[in-house]
Amino acid sequence: MSVHDHNVCLNTALSRADALCERRGVRFTPIRRKVLELIWANHESTKAYDLLEALKDFDASAKPATVYRALDFLIEQGLVHRVETLNAFIGCKQPDIRHDLLFLICLECHTVEERSTPNLSQAVASELALAQFTAEAQTFEILGRCQTCGSAKGP
Amino acid sequence: MSVHDHNVCLNTALSRADALCERRGVRFTPIRRKVLELIWANHESTKAYDLLEALKDFDASAKPATVYRALDFLIEQGLVHRVETLNAFIGCKQPDIRHDLLFLICLECHTVEERSTPNLSQAVASELALAQFTAEAQTFEILGRCQTCGSAKGP
DNA sequence: TTTGTTATGTTATATTATCACACAAATAAC
DNA sequence: GTTATTTGTGTGATAATATAACATAACAAA
Image 1 (cartoon, rainbow over the protein chains, first blue to last red):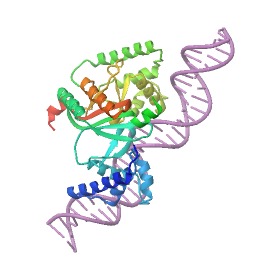
Image 2 (cartoon, rainbow over the protein chains, first blue to last red):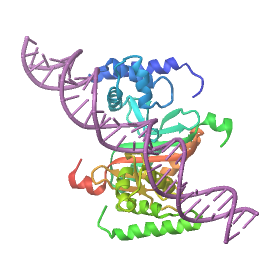
Image 3 (cartoon, rainbow over the protein chains, first blue to last red):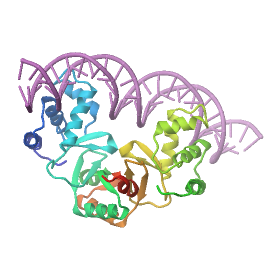
Image 4 (cartoon, rainbow over the protein chains, first blue to last red):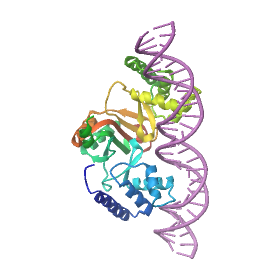
């Protein structure tokens, strides 16, 4: 990820989450908020047990279930995505919009970029129609090298 | 999956694998062949530890590593795909061809359908170009209901 | 305030996957 | 053909990921 003021990312994510939960009347408890904050510590995906370690500084009694419950909630609300390829979790940039997401996961710097593209959605939709398949959840993930890491070192 | 003679699927998969390994000069050992055979027992994806249980009838000394090593080999040769969403494994229908695959995973009957579509490949390729991202591996998986299960019960 | 619901604490355990090291089998080099 | 090298397997331990089950606490609704 390029140079940027990450506090802006973090604060934006948190205030959006505040607003979203308020609007939906769901409880954005301290644990849930803290887990989201930890996930947004950077633009890399985070492992559940790393979250747990970090969470313990905030709540010494945190256990695996503590983290997984918070993650379940955050995912359900669309605030966090699960990265299936890495068994890890990443903050959602556009929690209000429902769309087909494509994750570009850099193997070098571990940054995960969330993209959405009408072309992809379109291709998927027509394939689903062809197959007469009803989608409930989708995972589109690509592992590789991001622009920065790719050009810096070559393949 | 509809009514079909599954022996044909199984035998086709195994003889293709025989030929492919021969051609590549890689060793298609009894364990590797048996694991592939077990994976092709049906058109559902199979869990590693279920494979292990089944493999024990063939080789009583089988351990987790036995299965994971065989899977590593089969995946490397393109004979098997890992279904990330389910932590499971499925036989590849077209091990000779390199393409972007889309897996349609039915939550009801657990059948996994492997599809490839130029439209999707095209959409992905142009998105990668836009992002200047170099892909090394891709995962496109959709969970939902297949034609049969969808129409049988409704949503 | 009682009641029902949702969230958390806690312990245990299930599931998925890898490591490390010894040994055996196949292949390659001589 | 014997030796060396590489590749595959046996085995035990353990790491990493995730859920179950049940008790208690906090909140919301009546």
